Image (tube, rainbow, N blue to C red; front, side, top):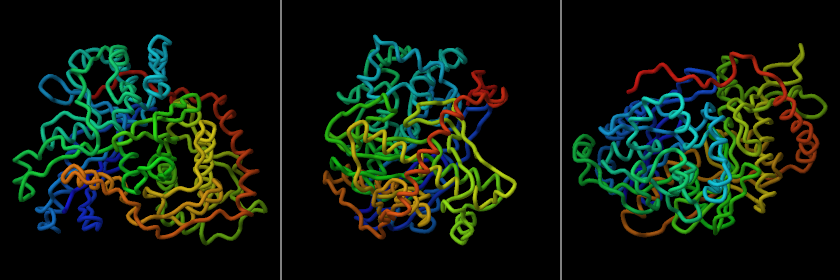
Length: 502
């Protein structure tokens, strides 16, 4: 059976054709982020659709027979985005994304004791989640809020475009702060806190069940032999978990994508909000997970590549070739990867990162090494937060575009003190997981085996010991950066956007 996985990410859309467990073809199309004010992050859903069409057009041109034979489509999507539709299903404004920090002030409204947010949703209120974004819109764009008939996450909007159904899976819905995560149901009190009710929400489904069939016009456009069924799918992290077979309690993976995730599958709902640990539903029925999240993982290297006018690949090669390190064996400066604030463990949207301890002798390669190490130390913060919540990870698989770097993978293994494993198809983990969920929706099976491991990165004892001491020093950056006043022009804006409704 051939299935199609579509991953709606932040930096692009990816479509993967899967025949049983063989990846037939992959197509991708880029996306850009709009930042109309400091701390804001938005995308136009029309761009998601254009990128999706570009991917399927490419697959049709290059693999028409395989695409025509697709029996089911699975969706993976960036989480938390607030896509607002009016009564006519038109998009009312650009989607406010997961890494948008404007709604920091609104989070306090959701933490009122009577709402029992942390007990119901399993998570603290963070600006990246969907609910505080709606409170911000209610306060700053009342004319938009008054027209809201439905609130969709990014992939739920894409599903509607594809098949005309309003449905969302449990894993993605967990990131809204409107889901009773333990009960796997919408929470009426949490919705009411934002002036909403279930009529504004898509229906909830498990990630493995059918939700509708592709619209006839798209069947004709892309030449499908029959209308494929659309699976419930998953939020991007849960899709990545399915891609690497992390569906059994105790399974773990590290995602080095635009954001960074350290994931652990759990048998039940295990909230630990005080350390910024997320507790969400898995896309697999009857399963949950914990995870730590950082907002700028591989995005930190991408940012540095842009600033330094050098490609990421060239920056990595420069570090690999450099032998002129200081006596500590690391770069000559520190880097804090808080470019968009941070979640685990700090839950601090106003936090900003940067380089520290620069000197006239600091080289570009030193700064690149500091970026790689700083991101690894932020992952260690997440590891420790999970451990404090009772989840101890002993090894993890690697997924995400950043995990293609042997240098970075080994640094992570040394810093975390964990064996890390590169697995087949890891760079396409989310799209692969979506395609796997589609197969289950089509034939009712359960085929979430672990892909073969291609390479393992074992901690080097000497390097791990060195990082233990360096990490304690690096941790001091948070307190110092938090106390440093920001330039007025760099503060997240609470002013409404001037963008006209779509």
